[in-house]
Length: 121
Length: 121
Image (cartoon, rainbow over all chains, first blue to last red):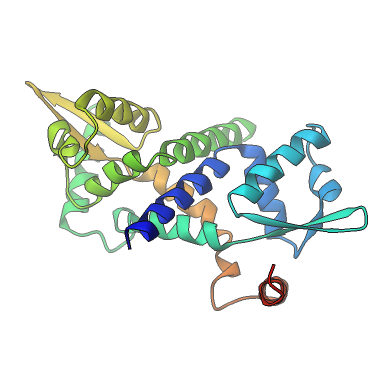
């Protein structure tokens, strides 16, 4: 159980670290729309050079967010969504703060914030 | 519009960077359960020293994830959920990959992954 929790925290560390970079987020967004893409297809929209794109792919692969498979000279990249799901599940704990189902505490906090904005803070 | 997009990307950068650290995630998780907490209350469950906790609070504050207000000697910390909401909205784009509403492409990708697992990759 402890080792699962440690692994869970480490996975979240790596997932969020991979998502910090806007180029890596843009790569994932490209993969969201299609089943798979070659590295050169993925690199095309970016002004950065291919080796820089490859480095970002390494980070995404290490974080388990993509898989790469080689066939001849072509490397095919696919999204591996499980870590994104885990990160989203973590964020969903906070959903009550912005959902219609605000409970007493959250409503109170939101009111306080509105007040703070009202007084120019 | 361009400046909005730049700000949006910068906000996501900062939010995900703040979430990379497990202590910072644990601080946010503590704030999820209550309206507000003092810095010493927040620091209590951690083995790390108070100055280290304060540094984490600085990062969370810079990312807009908490607000701090001082009254006498007590600093009260509150969750500011908006950036978490934005990060979750970003991740929700990928929801179709794991939801029941898998479309053709995603189902195909999942099958391929299952196949890859089946062959011991």
